[in-house]
Figure 1 (cartoon, helix red, strand yellow):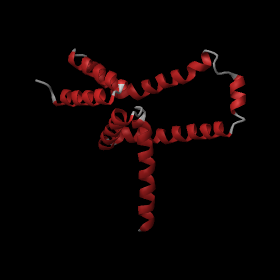
Figure 2 (spheres, one colour):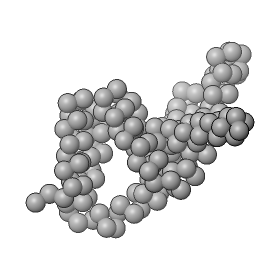
Figure 3 (cartoon, one colour):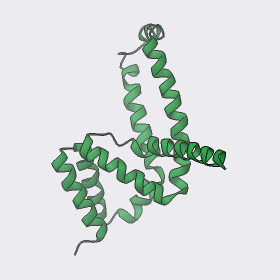
Figure 4 (cartoon, rainbow, N blue to C red):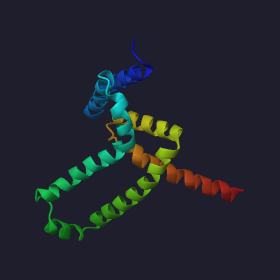
Length: 157
């Protein structure tokens, strides 16, 4: 009656409910409804191709909202540059974005790595209250780690 994919998603839904993870519950239900009403063939390719970009855009909107509402302005920016923690945050933001950029290529080119990263993200979201930005930065970290291992492997002979 149910496809393997639907059973897998229902198991994820159960895990999400047990873990009380609202984001995962909404995501699984959203995808199942799209599948069950027959829109999957049209929408799933779009989600796979543009989903990360759409998600990054939504996160960017959330981050920029305090600026447009006036909660953050030039005064707060001026105060922030005086803080060593703000400089650490600035450097961290730059580093994460650079690392994640390498991860996009890895996600596109290596399906078994993508599967492992997605599973890791699902487990983190469901069991540890993680946030589902994991595949992108996870892929970047995986890419960087693979290059470091490759470097030392070639160095050793």
